[in-house]
Figure (cartoon, rainbow, N blue to C red):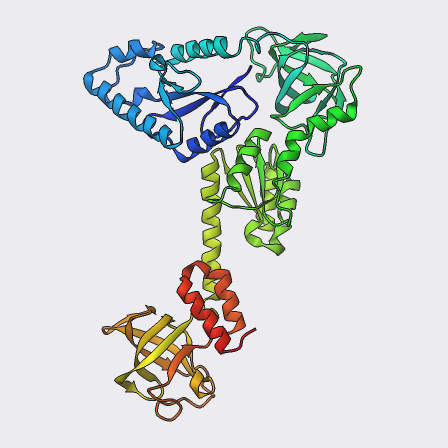
Amino acid sequence: MSHSQICGHEALVYVTLQFLVVDIMHGLEPQTIESLNLLKMRNTEFIVALNKVDRLYGWKSSPNAPIVKAMKQQSNDVQNEFKMRLTQIVTQFKEQGLNTELYYKNREMGETFSIVPTSAVTGEGIPDLLLLLVQWTQKTMETKLMFVSEVQCTVLEVKVIEGLGTTIDVVLVNGVLHEGDQIVVCGMQGPIVTTIRALLTPHPMKELRVKGSYQHHKELKAAQGIKITAQGLEHAIAGTGLYVVGPGDDVEVVKEATMQDMNTVMSRIDKSGEGVCVQASTLGSLEALLEFLKSPAVNIPVSGISIGPVHKRDVMRASVMLERKKEYAAILAFDVKVTPEARELAEETGVKIFIADIIYHLFDQFKAYIDNLKEEKKKEASEEAVFPCLLKIMPNCIFNKKDPIVLGVDILEGIAKVGTPICIPSRDFIDIGRVASIEINHKQVDVAKKGQKVAIKIVGSNSEEQQKMFGRHFEIDDELVSHISRRSIDLLKENYRDDLSLEEWKLVVKLKNLFKIQ
């Protein structure tokens, strides 16, 4: 069994029990709900660590004390605030379809998820968390905790160590690894078949991640963390399984099993080839990000994936989209670093790299970028994009007949905007000019909509053409419409689709048929 913590920035999907950390001051935030959905999807057991109780106003610290003992030291005001916030969070969990309860009141472990109030700063509740972990293990994992000979091993990290080359840090949960074992690990370019050159562990009282000398072993038995050196590990993927090829095993079958998780992730790439590139630190992180991006509320297509730091080759791959769809010439880098060479190339080519260790922050950055691009496109298209309108001249509102034409009109349908070209369908679609200004109650506006009565000034579109005149070229009974074209319709669809209501789009179709536009 292995344990991990979802700290609001990464979903690890290869574990049996999770700690779901919830901030007591903020409750279930979007990132927490995303992690919660992943846990539910994979039927993963979890314990809620209700963190930051030390932030409650007036909290008296009792370092590393059990939470019940720590709570007895608090004033009534602190206890009441705790109960109020706890009730709110329990309600939020119910809204997500889950029952939760303080662990020492929970009599239905398995049906109801336990909440352990904690403080990561002062240590209150940490003993309770460890106690609950042991109790849960004894109750649910008795058979699974027995040692078995079959190797169960997961790659945690891929790193280059001076003097050792590319190594992988693994956690060996079951079985035995030997120096010289043939192993298969998942790689970005396919399965990696190699032989263990050395099994290394740190010296006593040192962590595997700390640089320094290591102890060499001929064999190592579960359960422990191990550093493995072997050839060809450069493209190994963190978060995937490591398999040992036994004497009677078919290497091809083992290779297929090794790539199963990666193939599932690869199936989520957009087959059209259009989309952003995404990068994450582990396969679990990548899977969580892809799950988020494909959700209906987000719906961002992905054309390429990678694991580990962003390199020049990743920027070159993303740059393909510059000519196809500029907004997708981007890399969403989740909890990974960007090499200086990659950053420099991105600036030269115009590829955008967004970096965050929280999925929602990554999405917010990309959305702001897309919104900015859309606004730029709207500005570029504003002169050619013609909004649909149908105008009726009001009686006794002919203020000027020619050069410029100034009329009082009733907007029967659509949107009248400054710059809109106006024509008369009943007079062989004669163009009478463009709307130069709009007034409502003697105040100038840029836009007027259906139902409003306004004064409009129309000036000639071309100074070389004869200026049109009321009474000669058109009369009071003639309706005025915006002169749309195939080009203007396409610009509306591309840049202003959400700015028009369904009724206004129906008017576009009506005018399209009127002008016989294909």
